[in-house]
Length: 211
Image 1 (tube, rainbow, N blue to C red):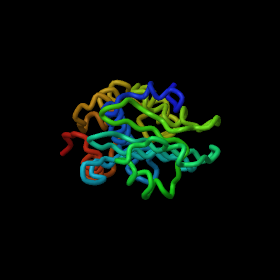
Image 2: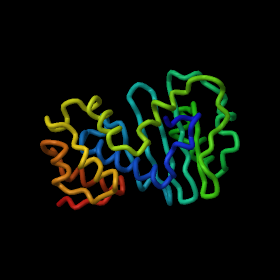
Image 3: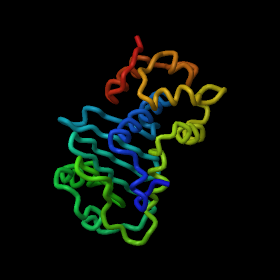
Image 4: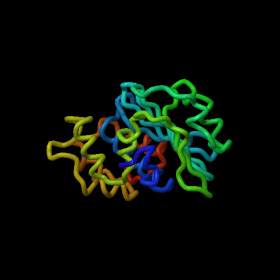
C-alpha cells in the first residue's frame, strides 16, 4: 500500500499526473458542483506549473504541484499529530519553496511531504513515529480504475447510473482516451450543463470531443 513508508510504490510523476487528471475528470462528470468534488485539477495554475487538489470536506487535503523539472506532494491530515515543518521538508529542493511556503499550503498545513525531480526518485522528509494517514490518502494513486470506482460508488451514491460506474469507461479515461459524450453518458444519466463540463475539461487539460 502506498504511504510515506512505501513511497517507492508511487507511480512515476508522469503517470501520477495522468491519474490526477483522470480522477478530476471523473469527479467533474459525477458532480458539476465544484464544491462537492473530491478531486480537482488546474493545468493553468501558473507558468509551466499544474496543480492538483484532494479535499475530503473534513479537513484532510492533498495538494500536488507538477513542474517540468519535478513534482511535490503536500499532505495534511487533520487527525495527525503536528510535527515541525522543517523536518517534514528536510532536503526539499528549493524549486518547491514557493509552493510549500506560500498559499494555499501555508494556511492548510503539512503533515507529510513527498517529492521528486528529474534526477531522483521519490523522496520524503523526516517523519516521526506516528500515523500520518498517508496510506488512506494516497491509495487513489495506485493506478487501478477499480480503486476509483469503489471509492466513488460510496462517495457519490446516486449520482451515477443505476447499473453502476462502468469499469470499461473508467479504464478508458484512466488511459487518457479522448472523452466523448457517449463515455459521459455511460457514467451518468445526463449532464445538466455540457458547457460547464467542457470548461472543466479545458481547465483540467484533458482531451475531449464534446460539442
